[in-house]
Structure formats: structure tokens, C-alpha cells
Length: 252
Image (tube, rainbow, N blue to C red; front, side, top):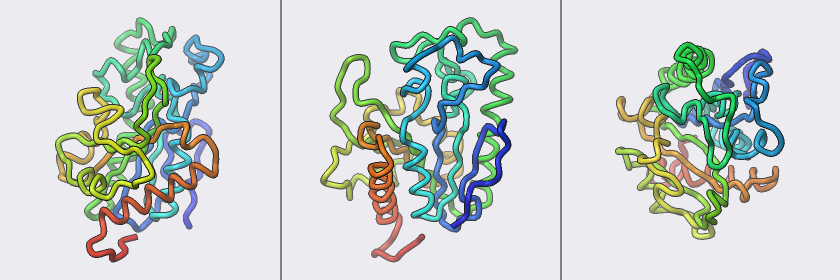
């Protein structure tokens, strides 16, 4: 199995399993809670720096497991979503949020046009370019983004366990939902949907050229340790493989 490319300490995007042979291209936009030192933790401290407001806990471990099982390339951000949310366009308020759920982000308040432009150029454009390059060299790519979500949001419990999200192209989501694992609570466009602005990567990289695409959201209490992350990677990989494989013939 191929390993990640050798990365410098200041690399902002990781391409994992770069020589993979599957048409599936995995993406994890919220893979890291890392905030570069020059941002002084954006004025945050304590649990906020490691909670779901800073990244998607467990998501990148699941995505790496899927990359190995499917022999699929994985493109992952190495910067906290609070510095730049790579699943948002530069003009979105949530790209550099001043507030995330109930947490105010002092270091994002009152950013100048130049400061925002610098973050876009430094953190978003390399990620976007890396994903574009990977997709360009894969024949008929299938874009699958992997996220996790908190079981309690604004004080409300969420009973959904896996969300299958899509924008205007429902083909892959429909196929997955037809074969949803019975042991899990699986729902379409929950806990978020297109109206929440979460389908940017799908729109930016898949809708125009017509690539099959889907966004998978896993409740993070289900992937809190290595064993559960491996089990979820196995479940999601098999699920995707079946959805993409006519009459059960292996594609990966």
C-alpha cells in the first residue's frame, strides 16, 4: 500500500495514497485542528481548540482507513477549519468564522480584506489546487467527502448516526440510501444539507463535470477510538463499493 507523500512541517494539504488505482477520490476538509503559531490560537483556549468547532474529530482516521480499503486517493487539509474552512468558498461568512456554534473566535473578528485574501491564498487555494489535480488524473472520478458531526448541537441531541448529503446530483446518494446499513440511523441531508452551505466541495469539483459525488457525515461519538474508526471505515468502504459496482463485480 502506498504511504502519504513526504510533507514539510508547513504543508497545508496532504495527498494520501497518491498512486491509488480506484476511481474514488476521498476528501477530508476538516481533518486537522492545527492552528499555526502566528495566529496565537485565535484567542481561544481549553477544549475549544480540540473540539468539533476546530475540526471533525475522527473523520481523517476513518477517511485514511477508507483510502486503504478502497485503494483511493485522499486529499486532506492540515489546517483547522477556524483558520480557513476548505468546504466553504472565500466569500462565505463561514470560511473564516467569527463564531462557531456557541464559541466566539476572537482572532477571526474584524479581519481586513487583505487578511482574508492572505488566508485564501495560503490555505484554501493549495487545497483546491491539489484536489483539482488529483481529479484531473483520475478517469471518471467519484468524489466522496468524509466528515463527522457532534451528537449535541446548540443543546439539542441528534439521533441520526450517518448522514448522506448531496446537492443537485443525487445519483450516488440515492444508490447508497437504497442499501443503507440497517444497524445505523441513516438519513438524507442530515444533520446538514445544501441550504447550510456544506456542499461547496461537491459543487466546486463534481457538479460541473458531472462526476458522481456524495458527502458522508458520521456522528463523532461513533468514531471516538481506533477500533471504532476502523469499523466505520470498513462499513463505509463496503457500502460505497456496493453502490458503485454493477452486479457485485469488484471495482477496487
